[in-house]
Image (tube, rainbow over all chains, first blue to last red; front, side):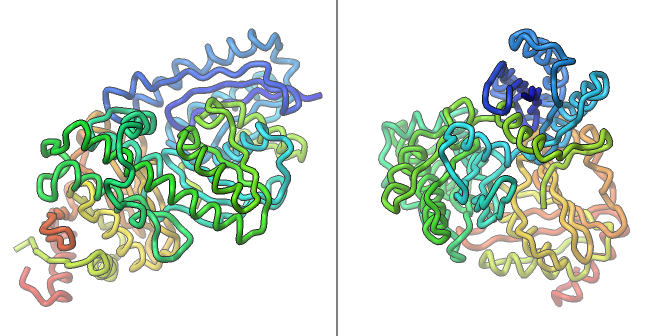
Length: 339
Length: 160
């Protein structure tokens, strides 16, 4: 029997979870900082770091109380240490180091992206390797071939902006607010997804990767004209905004599904896993499930609360690392980006 | 004279211009890129990276603020977009590499930095002229980057 306490603080959520054997969630807490960030239209890193620091230890205490676990009963302390905002990562990692040292427990560091993939495996235990995983969030847009536990091969990625970042920037250009994902989806319900032919801007000629920078420019031109720039007045009426939002969402979702399904077909796998904040997008979930089915693939999609950043996924991946004895020294550092 | 204007008529020629800038770099260069969303800041940076012998794709650092790529010279790519004028790179410990030997720094959205900008740097303003064409206005600040500007003028065959 093992008990792992995991911390996630790579971007704007501080989260703590305690899992038994990587399967049973005894506590899962997320202290959302979204309200702090909303007025800035994005994550302001210094705000993020300060807020992580304020809530981390109270969150750990609450998780222990909720799980009815004493620190001495824990098997290990885990934390995300890459990739993400460096200051934000350092708060969670340093906290985990301090706790591991004070409680005399082993420390396990987890790759945030591998955590998102683990969330799909956790939500859908019948999924077997090999499978194709699409991780899509504010900072990442990656397709992996997962050939076994801990065996990830990167097949494709964005060549410029991440899909989630594109959602945030497009929402800002359309005066729809932050976070961009839910705001765009809401406006898209009443819009025409064929109003603007934007899909091809997301599909670079290499036939493998993604590009969302051209799409962002297309939204800028549609919303504010070619000359005025992002500070120019919004040229669209309500219906126009809805149409732009729907066309934007259609382009992103179709591009993600097209590349992922092609990768699954190429690799000859039977499963597709989705992860990351953008996987909370209803349109993406439905389209991926439908298109996957056409090539005989089942699609593993975590529930909404395990798509957005959480610590359960970190604990699940940490459990695998715990079982293989992959512990870290207290000198381990945080890494903003994995090259 | 310490400024140059240069016109690009396609993303490809913007990348080529980035590679030309890279060919002059000796380490310690700092480029501040001013231009709206979609002006071509990332595109220019991609060309510069390629010119520095960096093969990995240069992606937007908006989320992580700072990306680092090893090459002939190390490229440190910053994006201050999300700071929204409320923070500074120094406060985040990200400015240590400005002007460092063996390193080239590119900063997108420098106007979002609250303060503590270096005094020797190259200002690159990108103006959108038409959907395809862009005008790059380079302005050298400090002795080091004025020297860079003279070499660039020579290569481009224009008077700086």
